Length: 205
Image (tube, rainbow, N blue to C red; front, side, top):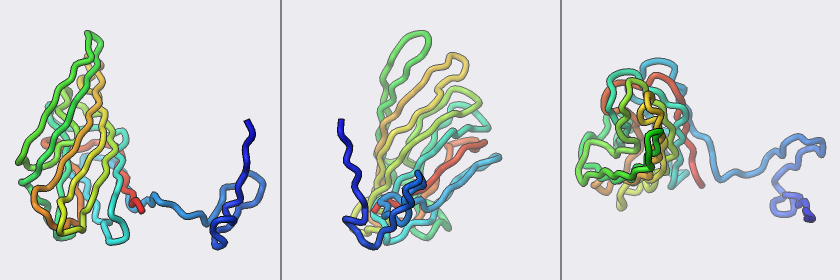
């Protein structure tokens, strides 16, 4: 196979080419921009992001190695705010997800959940353990467009029951049922707190 190396300056003369010594290129444009990140290092009830601006129409959130402290059998969800995070809507969300579980005693098995009017958009289902281990990738659309619904979709994974070591993958989607501009996002468990992990926010051009 023959590879052809292309100098990016052929396409945009404002970009700088790094030295030919293995160092990374500099000045190259990016369509995925890291905007904010929260490292969870102790009991944290909510993780809020307010870096929503007119620069981006879409956002991506990545949750990594999230663990929970507190009661078992709780799910994780997302809420929106229209006042910069001073408060978050606690009703009027619609969501649906499909949950595929594989475990040591059998499987896989497939379940689903959803609601037309709920207090958040569920992005990760209940975990039958006192500890929580999960991750997710979520896309957020139209948050500042007051003529369209703010909605999300994505995928999450979790350790469903530490004792029997099952593993679960969830495909989810949801929206806020009123078309309005929303400028902040909150992640939280329905009970208990996050113990550790990381959630990162990116803007997509």
